[in-house]
Image 1: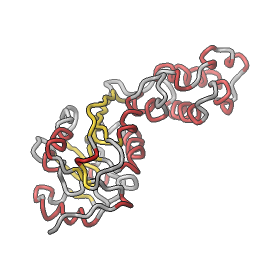
Image 2: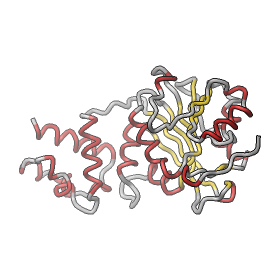
Image 3: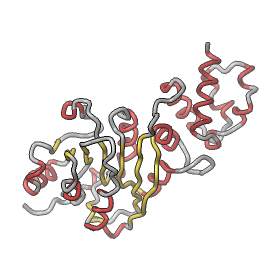
Image 4: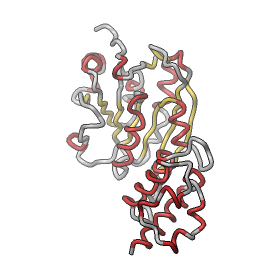
Length: 259
């Protein structure tokens, strides 16, 4: 079977550098799981290195041409190629609520949605690693005070220890993307349940950053803050000035105010 042609509408850029593929596979620590799910494997350049590890490897791929290629070239994947859209599929139809790591050379157009779905499944995903557009990887790993620090940074770092690992140049892909790529890893925190209402925490972070130039006193008006609470100096700050811990503290204060 001939090689798969990259499809623009699927955001496909096939990694051609074997050394980088091995480096990405080696970002997995293998701690806390025995199964890994690769998202968007394409022709399996990363998959082959995952199959060498002491792991049960599954792949999920929306492109039927890639699915055919994987099935014909990787007999070890027999029965473990899931021909579905990761964002829409209930993975527990296959995984039955067991823990698994996520890895991939993620399509740029859906990479942030993949992270959000991982956060939704954080009880099952102790580790998440892979390649993004460089600025997205940097944003996830950025700290308070940075211009790119935002919703994704705070929510990812609330539950995971995040680390930007290395940069990948465009010429190692076919076709080459117009931007650099970055590989990052998220390892779930030992205690990843927050000491606040988690649903409220998500809302506070998202609404705060929707108007990031305003102080929190103005951007969080919809929470019906009492005059007394609005006097708290934390509301003088803009969202990018708050650490994850301060967002937790803010959520606790808003929850107490509503009682």
